[in-house]
Length: 322
Image (cartoon, rainbow, N blue to C red; front, side):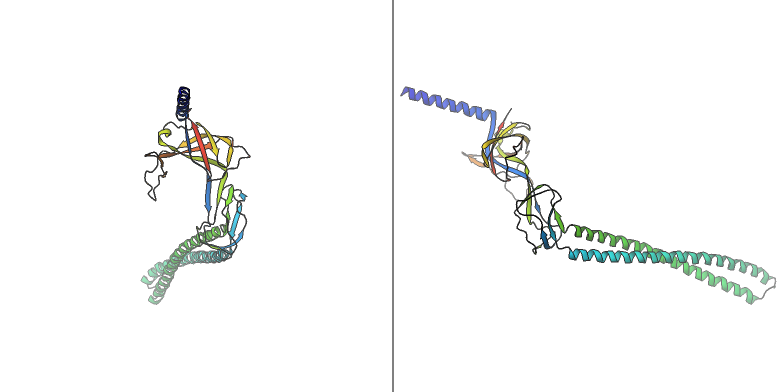
């Protein structure tokens, strides 16, 4: 009986020592999962799907075509704006030519006005000397006034045409801006991959109408995964970037993968209020007290090529404190 008690005491001591070693030299959690960069693919304009270029779970590279919306309406809009732009440019050239013509007429009118003014001065002296009749003198005055009236009208016409030219320039800039938008919209009828990754949840079919910003499927860059581990707060203070980590995933239970701590989240929200910027990590019941957890980002070290990880799958991690 004494030997039995001794064995139990030794076993308890061994368990305590192992527990102290386990909890004193590292941090363990099973509340961890595999993450990867991913995005929801959505068109930047609305339209009917004309063609789908990729299949579900297919690997794509950045810039590869994913699907295309029917470009017909957007092409018509661009054609219309091209025509409007050409018409506006032609009108601009017409106004510009009119301005050049009016400037030449003003130049000729100025010369005629100067001659008429000299005639008035000359005939005024002659009339004062009774060398010419008053009718001849008044005739030259009338010619001057008519030339002056015509000159003033030409200058008003020049000012109006210059205002029209500025207005037409603004109209051309507006049409060009609308044309650039139409050209851009035509280009983005073809939706391309924003980065390398795997197509997920793709059930898109030709003929489907999609709204602007409507998510149609996703792309996950699972070729570059990492681990997000939610670790209890009494361990977090001892975790530092660069510390070694052992990782066991449910996808590959026979392989212990190596990683390192990349960063530790600096803040979490203690309430599960919607719309908060700070993340909320659900505390797990540990006896009576609820232990809050902080998210630790863990990067893989030399991930074997035959190990294929999937975003969202579970993992267990042990962080060494040295």
